[in-house]
Each structure stands twice: as C-alpha cells, then as structure tokens.
Amino acid sequence: MNGHAFSLAGAELCALPSGALWWAARRLLCVADLHLGKAERHARRGGAALPPYETEETLARLDADLAATGAETVVCLGDSFDDDAAARALPEAARTAVARLQVGRRWIWVAGNHDPGPTDLGGTHLAEAAIGPLTFRHIAAPGATAEISGHYHPKARLRTAAGRVARKAFLIDGDRAILPAYGTYTGGLCCEDPALTALMRPEAIAVLTGRRALAVPMHPRRTARA
Image (cartoon, one colour):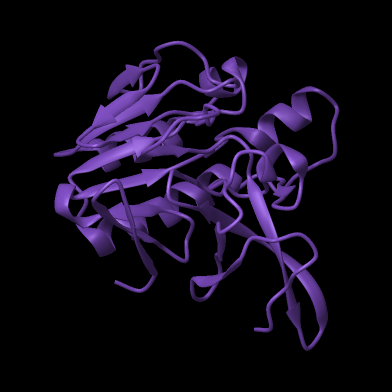
C-alpha cells in the first residue's frame, strides 16, 4: 500500500497520499471532512464562487480509494456535509453515487459540527465510534489516547524548487492521528497553529498528502525538501 505506515494503540495503520486512513486488519477506510455541497452553500450564502463539481470530485476520489483497498467498513469522521441545507440539496446523482459506494459495506457517519442529524443517505449515524482499540470522533479531545479525529483540516508547509507550498497533512503522535480534510476545496489550518501544537506531542510528525505520502517533523518553522 502506497502510504505512510504507523502504529497506534497496537493498530497498524496507513496514511494514504489521498488523505484517507487505511486499517488493513479491519478492512476499514476512514476519511474526514468531506464537506459535500460546499459549492452549493457558498453560492446560497453569496460567498466566493467555487467550481460546481467539488462533490462529484470528492466522491470520485473516495470511490478510487475504496476500489484500491477493498474496504469493507467506511468511517466518515464528521463534517461530511457543509451544512444541513447542503445535505438536503445534494443532487440526485450524488445521492446515487453515495448509495452505490455503500453497497456491501458497513458505513458509519460520525457527527461533526457542520453535520445535519440523520439523513436518508443510509449508513449508521453515531456521535463517535469505538472500534477495537481506537476511538473515532470528529474533534480531538484533549488528553485522549488511541484517538482518530478530523475537524482542523491540518496542513503543513513544504519547500520545493518553486518555493514553499502548503499541503494537506495527517498529524500523528503516540496518542492520536488527526486526519486532513478529504473534501475538495476545503481550507486548512497550519500545523504550527497553537490549536494543533497544544494537542500533539513534541515528537509528532506531519504526513503530507499528494503524489506520495511524505512524513516530516511537526515542528514550528521547520520545513522539508521535496
């Protein structure tokens, strides 16, 4: 599997370049912050116009990850929809795509701060999910261990020949993993932000997404060369 392998609470996990988390022993794929319907919400609220195909693109990438891994369980770590109205306004093609992805799989929607209540999109809706030694929740709980979360949309900086760029990134230490936002056109929070440094141990790493998963130290003002 092309990604960064790591262990958390005895679970052997892999941070994929796409931003998804793979747990092979459980045949489980976890994604955070899909924010389906983001373009629709921006248009509805008079915000900056976004390309209208973000939901289609996000679901296509998820489809590709499911096909590559053969996942039997999917955990969506909250903020799967950009808001209640965006969930209700999902076009029929997107609803059909979600239903197709769910066929033959256990599908868990973990509640997020943007999420609506239970929808008619199938699957199980939970405040958080305990699976084996791990707890899956939307927002990291200070002091928690063996935790997988999302919410912050972490990004890390990378030095390239063209200059510094920011990429979506996993943040990983011995207590937890915080996943990057999987959705298209989702913003991000720099891993040097105090909200994130307060949660992560000094030895934490950032695993940048992109063509390959690249692990670098999560440390203020430190960058890596591509």
